[in-house]
Length: 331
Image (cartoon, rainbow, N blue to C red; front, top):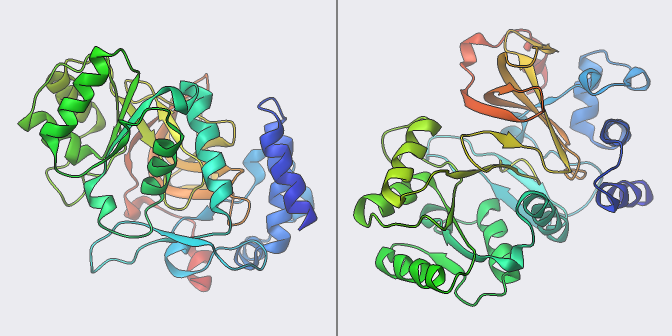
């Protein structure tokens, strides 16, 4: 599709493109070619041609990924990413047209903040994710591992002594290391094998729910810092429904990748926004989500800073959400 290809080329052509202008173009394209999004826009009685700013774009509630195929255009999915969940819960499904586009997007986001992936030895501690199919996080980690120039890179399940041994060997050889792991596994590693890993980048990806007592991000980072003698813990903030990721180099302060922006909406009025430093619900623009929907209203709470960095504060209390009655008619 010519328009799609042109938009993708613009997204990856330069990190200095006019984000708002390109986002409006993506919005117009998806409003026309995404049946679900098109119907949602009609229910809101929004005139597509009158949308000129990011704050005027309607954001699709993330719950639709649990009940519908969210697709822009007509195509067969190369894979389907699925969210983790209990047997009684409905999982989200993200139909992915191009894994090549996903891989390219993940690299762009990471390297925009950390530099070339190939310069890191990548260790992935993702036990629960490796045990199920359709994990976007496993796909990303696998791609990073393959791009690394260090043969030490790889996935780890429960061989904690072997993992610690490899991490220390890399430290001795002064190899830059990224240990990417779900929260509960990193905590378990620290509890069983507290080790001085002061020269290693440890990045938590969340993932505590249902595995052990829930901790705030600050509490999690405090414990991990104590176990591994680190000043800062890195974080990755991504979702099954997205193609791109946010990253934090410490203190839970996230920055956007070139393909993303974050807005904070009022939890009692989903079509208005709060001022910087005020807490609200997170809306995410992911331009690389060109084949799905690039404008997603999440169920997470956040607070944006003046420099466009932000914090993730937790989950929205569903009882606080107002003004979304139109969704019921179509869900």
